[in-house]
Amino acid sequence: MEEKRKAAVSAVGLVKDGDIVGLGTGSTARYAILELGKKIEKEELDILGIPTSKATEALAKKCGIPLTTLQEYEVIDIDIDGADQVDSDLNLIKGGGGAHTREKIVASCSKRLVIIVDDSKLVKKLNIPVPVEVLPFSWKPTASKIKELGANPIIRQTDDNREYITDNKNFILDCDFGLIKDPRKLEKELNEVIGVIENGIFAGFTCEVHVGSKKGVNILK
Ligand code: 5RP
Image 1 (cartoon, rainbow, N blue to C red):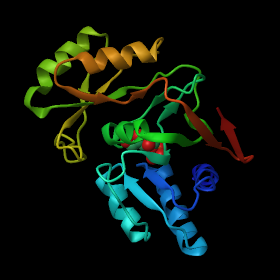
Image 2: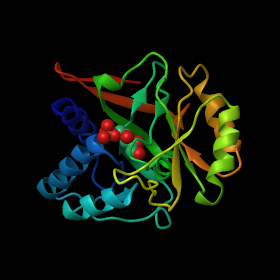
Image 3: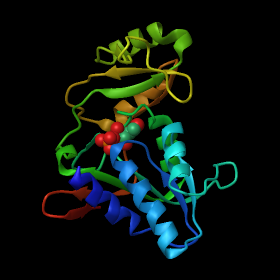
Image 4: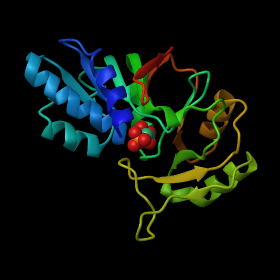
């Protein structure tokens, strides 16, 4: 936990007065939101946040971070978000918290993308299941088509065995492809499957990754 917090504090240090800030989702992004709330109060900053999930929106409000939308600001100065895995080329897998569609949109609107992780998330090649947000209407045929790409999709469920529903009112298929040799290709192929809204591979984004460890924070670019 301390490693995640260190990465978050390092990223929030980059936020400047007047910035529009993308607010990520998850336990690491949570530390960033808490820290940003404190920074706004202490330094009397004029900042607006754009949350990537309903949970983040609620937390940001609690922390006193004024919020806005992509309709009011189409360009974000800095986006701070977590990741489930980061490879040696800084490709990411996101969506452990089911928020990757909004997260990818916010990242794509951002001038600076800062990813915050602890060092357990770093790998040479991406290899965990890829979260894929799909339309509930056709999730089974969509899952069958994803199977043809080489995964065995599993529909994400809640603790009480219901389908997990995203903030966009869709389902998530967790798709295990084993070791992902070409993340950019797989990201495109998945998004071409009918019924797919967005998948959790973030390939080819220009980002910097703040990695918290016992020793401190290392920044990968
Ligand atoms: C949510 C995400 C999160 O950023 C990702 O799951 C990492 O979460 P955590 O910081 O809790 O490990 O993509 O959709």
